[in-house]
Length: 305
Image (cartoon, rainbow, N blue to C red; front, side, top):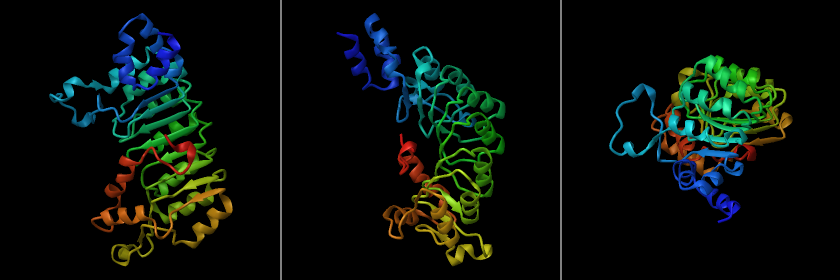
């Protein structure tokens, strides 16, 4: 069979099928499996055959997991192919990425421009500095897994190395610290999505006001938290699950931005999410629903996967 036909067929397979299957059949299939066209996008999402365990809870493999592959081993295998041409790299949002795994791929994927990276915890600053120093061409970054707040050092490692970064999506609550980090370290940012996040109104206003180059902002399906009269927040319904209720934010955003995306007061998704809340401050775990099920979706086109 002609090699270009094999490449077209292999393009319908996932990464595991290629590195553990087609590349091992014969010389012809081996060569076709190394074709550059197959490695421009590496999508590691939704692959049940890959194991990525929380290192804090790592233990022996179960019977079901014995026939699966550890993420670190798969990444090492990928680097033996044409990973130098990779421009789109997608990790599943449930992976527990560790410093050693980034060290395996970063030097061999220096052309990555679009990246989806789950950060369930803060990584070593030197490790992230090394990693993102290899990814200076990065233009679009999606940080998934709404876990612990991202540290100042982690943001600095990304911001200081990725001056070409213009599109960012964060699946985590927006507080004053996070707003300050975005303004300080991502000054060239043009598009930002906080889709499905919990937003402190004061932090949101600060972000919209202080960021000088931001042009597109997506606040679809967000919660809005007003801390004025803090003692009465729980009882007086300061948490808003649809629409924007702060005049200053609306006025500032519509004047400064080219695109400002918010939900209507009758958004069905927001109503459903609000119904899942077990209490007024139970926004974190329930808004994780969007990060688990719709993390690849976004109203800003360049942030979709």
